[in-house]
Amino acid sequence: MIGLATAHLTLTDWDDDAVDNLVAMHNDPEVQRYLDPNRFGWSREKAQSRLAGWIEERLKLGLGKFPVIRRSDGAFVGRAGFSLYEGEPEIGYSFDRPYWGQGYATEIARALRDWFFASRPEASFIGFAHVENLGSRRVLEKIGMAPTHVADVIGMPHQFYRLVRA
Image 1 (tube, rainbow, N blue to C red):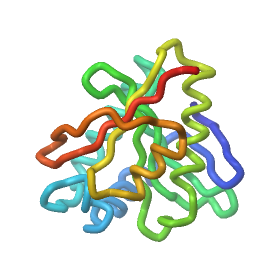
Image 2 (cartoon, one colour):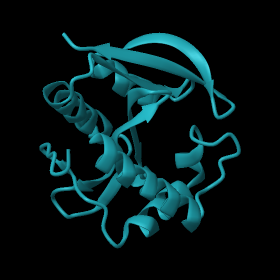
Image 3 (tube, rainbow, N blue to C red):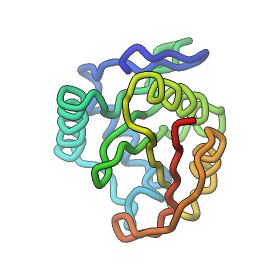
């Protein structure tokens, strides 16, 4: 998945700025609005822990979250990829607020969907977004995911989706 490129974005390896980029992005209360019930930001320790987990997922499972970099200028836009959620591959993404509304989430989600079905043996993957996060829900729907159910994730209601291999 590393090196996955779209017209405007690429997924790359985490670099020396990874922790700083994650802390900066996840300390914006609007970014955290649907990710934490109290909109708490990430400490350096939490960013380091999450980063270590994604790297471990990559090494063990071939999955993980990766930095999303804008190709035109090398800007850190956010993070995206697949992780396991309750044993199932789950697509996920978070973008820094200056990059919202530019179609980047849909662009990288489409590329991740295509990569998944071309490279992985699983028949399906899931995704979920806070029930009020209409932007993220639209992204999941745009890539062909169908809503399945609403369930609690970290104390907040989330709409779950599934996409099955054609």
